[in-house]
Amino acid sequence: MIEGRSRTTIWIVAGIVAGILIYLLRDVLLPFVAGFAVAYMLDPAVRHLMRLRLPRGAASAVALALFFLAAVSLLLMTLPILQSQIATFAQRLPSYVERLRTLVEPLFQVLRDRAGIPDVSDLSTLAGKHAAQALGWFGTVIAGLVSGGAAIVGTLSLLLITPVVAFYLLRDWHKVVERIDLWLPRTEAETIRAQLREIDQTLAGFARGQALVCFVLALYYAIGLTLCGLDFGILVGVFTGIASFIPVVGALAGGVLSIGLALIQFPTWGPVVAAAVVFGLGQVLEGQFLTPRLVGDRVRLHPVWIIFALMTGGTLFGFVGLLLAVPVAAAVGVLARFAVARYLGSPFYRGHHE
Image (cartoon, rainbow, N blue to C red; front, side, top):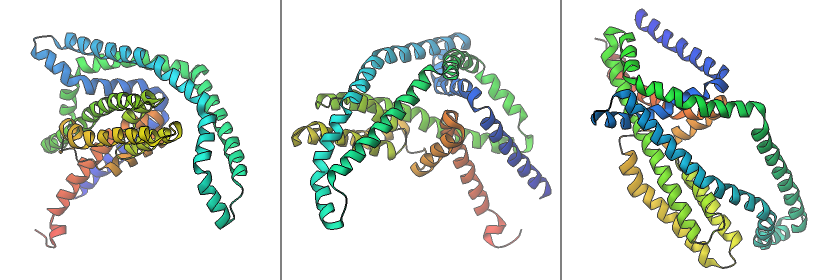
């Protein structure tokens, strides 16, 4: 019993120390965590290339080269379009605010008459003032991110160090696994291996599968909303696809944004209904085909747990916390289920001592 408590204490202390180190080094760790994420995502591709009789080093180089080539090509194709749409959206925002005001003015009129709410013109002036302040603050933040020396250094380190870290991790992945296996306590090694395998299956099923789901949804929404005539269909589609990584919240945000912009932009209901149909079909595509096939049913990560993990990780550790949130959530979920199973099989739960 004392020995078990000692091991538990060691694991708790190690977790606390790891959390403190991640918090203190969160700015430095970003390229290393990103490199680990890339290596983890590409490890199946490297194993596939090795089955084609490529050495692991060459397979790692080929997989990384293809990955970054595809990423850079996609960025070069989409960035100018997204930049143009963002600039156009900023220019049209005042007219959209005015259009929104005219849409909700009858409702405000009724509320003013029944509840004594201030005049609509006052609300419009107040909203315009705060919108201008928000835009000014947003522009200041963006300018700081672009021109700040620390941001430039961080971006360069991310672009230069991440591929190097990913390559060496991919090349030496089997050695790292073997070395960690040697460090496991021999009496509990098989139990720990079983939990690590389940963590890997859970994380791989969610992270790799959900990344493919987000990519397909971004492509679908961008094309569908553009065909509906939405001015910022590509921008909204990409945002909705990326936000779909967060269960429920991403879909809700994308739906409200796309249908809301359609209501503001179009004077008739036809295009609005078309945008709603595109979004509804996207949800059917995600729920009935993409998620079951790409993510699978074995991934036991509850949406509420994922949302909590992402919010907590982002709040405590910034972008590094966002990258680590899902792996940590997967590990905690697996270990919690293991602990509950051990508790349910213990004499303490059954009410008698053996």
